Length: 212
Ligand SMILES: [Zn+2]
Image (tube, rainbow, N blue to C red; front, top):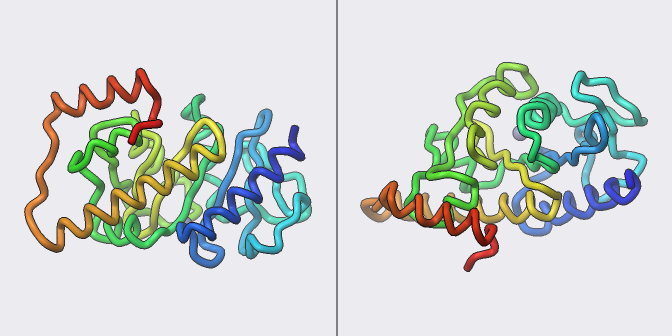
């Protein structure tokens, strides 16, 4: 099972680059595995990753493997500990999410697909230095009742029930961030009502997020 997960992790990491979500070695990706997680190594180009480069670690930071884990492993561990439904976590610095996050802006319900992240908006977590426990606290808080958040002066983090789901959600949130940024540049943003978002969330709860 772990070997399958290691290969899935590499495939998804490569897909993050191929779809433009990730630049260089700034992103990271993990999947829950037993009492810990498998996570991409620190500072390595995804293109050359082999299964042995993937690090297994528990949520206290004890590692098994030849590489060092991503320097941002702490918030991955914190999310798994706080959210039982989180099975895979994706973090990256995609352009539109990061631009909004550098303004300290989250994404309001300007489009019904915001509900794909689990609620009526996508919050922006407060800033703290990367790799710190303080940042983990901010991210966990911004993810309350949500599966995705922006991170001030940093980027995007999301989770799902599996790796393909996490990738799909990240692509959706980056698309929403791109459209929202464009609206901010050209006019007034209309926001869907709480009542309408309740209807959308209900439909998402019923049908999953496979809507178009
Ligand atoms: Zn980062």
